[in-house]
Length: 285
Image (cartoon, rainbow, N blue to C red; front, top):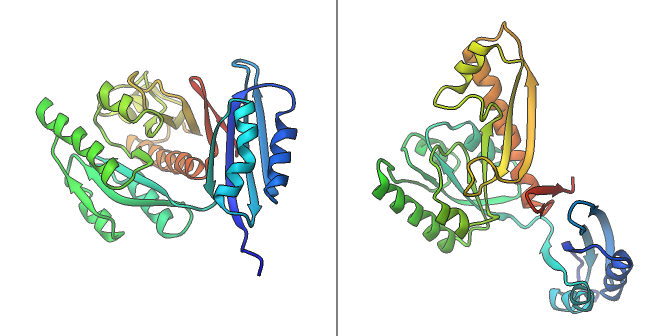
């Protein structure tokens, strides 16, 4: 009997040189693979080649990797092979605002987001009932001073190891991560913030925006680095507003954009559609 085919995601990054696509295609043919989706990009800025493929093949992982290895070694590729639809192990950090957490948990339950969330970790107890509603374990550790912040970050690293976490999502977690934690989890932490930054800082950015008569409300999802809000951008969205919108309406509009933007970023990451090109991202939609 013929073995059932597995649907794989293959991502490749290397120095841009002639013959890469031909060589990769030949390796996939050697693995008896059928390409179902293919996207590529050559960065003129960094001279880097990026490629994402989805491949169906009945051969196992070991045979597929053997077919790819001569090509990946010849071109010095950074590459990743994973199964289409495998849930991404995701840790979510929250404070008091629940709109982003609710959207992530709802879409996970609805089958719209291929993530596995084994834990929600919070510095306030407010969202425990929301996590419980979706059947997701919730832990609360207060952060009130430097000592408790160190303990919270130690628990993050412990949870990453304990649950084999691949992605950490700051779903309106209102604490700045230490440089040491950013370095330990480099490329694995994303954040969401309103796009008023850096113009409107502090606890009430939407009230400040209302007072200044802003015309656009938006949100930005980005990787977390030790440079606050300077990490590579994954997704951004905006909505036009005007003087008729109250502060409460701006908050509601902004929260919708934050939820939509963060969930889209998580979805692309779960599907291996986000590749880093220095300080920016390549998104294969």
